[in-house]
Image (cartoon, rainbow, N blue to C red; front, top):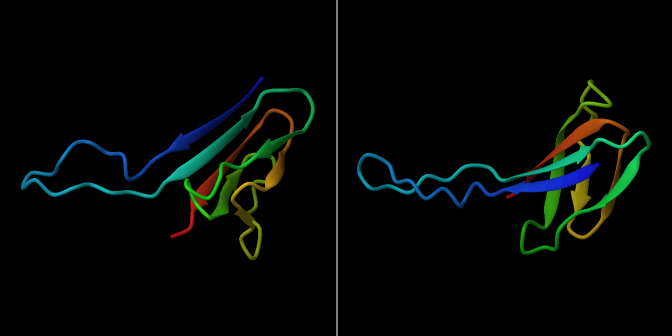
Length: 89
């Protein structure tokens, strides 16, 4: 009922037209399909030291200021929702 997915923006293997490397933001997606809120533990610092909440389907209005979560910390994801975090650079 729950899944965390790391989308590595530095892991793009395809090269540009002139051989340049493509790099994008890295994201952490926390899916909670359970009927109750669940706690998710963020990956260690090697994946990213800080993560900023960019989208939460349980709270459609963005938090002001944007919520930041540290590596290894836990965060609660509401029932049947998706939390998207962007790695801070």
